[in-house]
Image 1 (cartoon, rainbow, N blue to C red):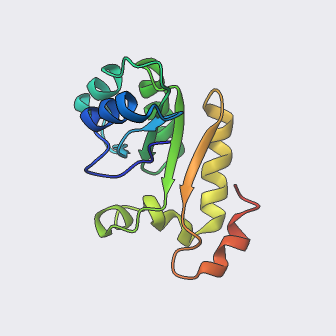
Image 2: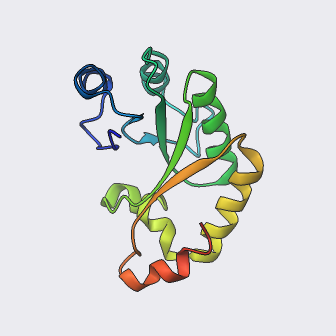
Image 3: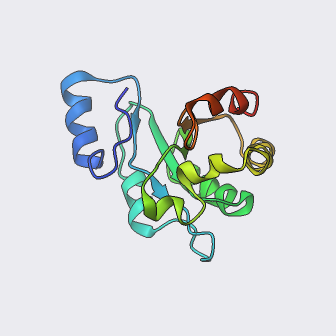
Length: 148
């Protein structure tokens, strides 16, 4: 598996890794879901996904918040070629956590449970999550596991 690494797992690196080591799946860098825009996913991200022509399955990692926005984004990326979806609940980067995305979603397990339940109902197929052991306490994982 070629795991998602922001700033690294672009189309060129994915193609190189597929040619050299043939991973079972490759991930995109995280795709930012725009909750306040009619265009939930940037055209450049959709073009990147559409450009994946390998038989190695592509996992698109979404980062955002809100069931409606994430559901629409999931459908958009599935329509252009995403075979699997992954929700980023692990990014600790300040720009992401300030927007209630990434690792910030771990701060409120109740809201996170509602979000995941809504996504399970709305998105066809399954999806995975990238998560941290907890927002600022690794013991939080034991509270989070039943939610996943």
